[in-house]
Image (cartoon, rainbow, N blue to C red):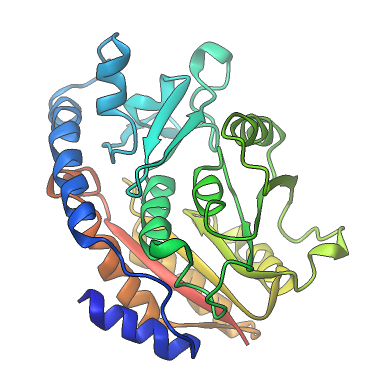
Length: 314
C-alpha cells in the first residue's frame, strides 16, 4: 500500500520521493492512541451531558493531546471534551511536540468555531507529517523544502505549525480576529519563525502579494456552508501558483452528510473552471489517512468518517 502510494506520488510529480514513511512508528502511535481515547469514547456514548476530564494534567494530556475524540451536539454547535483545556500538547509521529493554546470557556471564547482544536485539524496534521518523512514533502509538484504553503481557515494553527518544520514558509490565515490572536500566540510559543499569521477573508483579495504565490494550500472542514463555496474557489485560484495544489481534509458531523456536502462543493468547483479534482491522488491519500486512525478513534468519527481531496490548479 505505502509503496504503491509513493509510486503514485512519484508519477504525479515527475520527481523522486524524498524519504520513506515510518510505518512501524505510526502503527505504534495508533495503538497508543487507541488506549488513550477509549475512555473518552465510552464516556461520550453513555453520558447525556458533556463529560469532565480528570483534573490532573497528566490525565488531561493522555486523553486530549492529538487524540481523536467524539463530538457531542449542543444547541447550535458541536463540543469536544477537550475544548475547555487552555492548552493541548500535541505529539507528532516524528517525536516533536507542539503546544496549542485554545480559547477556553474561562477566557470567554469557549464553543466558538476556530478557537478550539478540532478533530479534522489533528487528522490533517497527522497526514501532513506522515507525508513529510525524511524532511521533505511528498504532496506538491515541487518535491523540495523550498515550497511556500498557505493554510485557509487555520483556526489555532496546528497544521501550519507542524508543516513549518519541513517547508520554507507557511502563511496561516483566517477571517476571524479572535482566532488569529490565538494563532499568533501559538506561533510565538512554538518559536515558528517561518510561519506568518495573516487575516484573509475569502473573496476579498486586497493584497496582490498573494497572487500565484503558493505551491500548496491546505485546509480542513471548510465547506459546510455552501454560500462560501464561490469565495473559497476564487481564493484558491488567486493564491495558488500555476502548478499549485490544494490538499483538503473533511470529516463527518452529526447532521452533516459528508458525501453530499463534499460532492456539492466539488461539482461547483469544477463547473467554474481553473481548478480540477485529482481523484486518484485524493483516493490514495484517503486510504493513507485511514491507516493513521486507530480502531477506537474510528468510533469517534462514526457520524461520517474522513476523506481527503486533492484539487489542482489548471
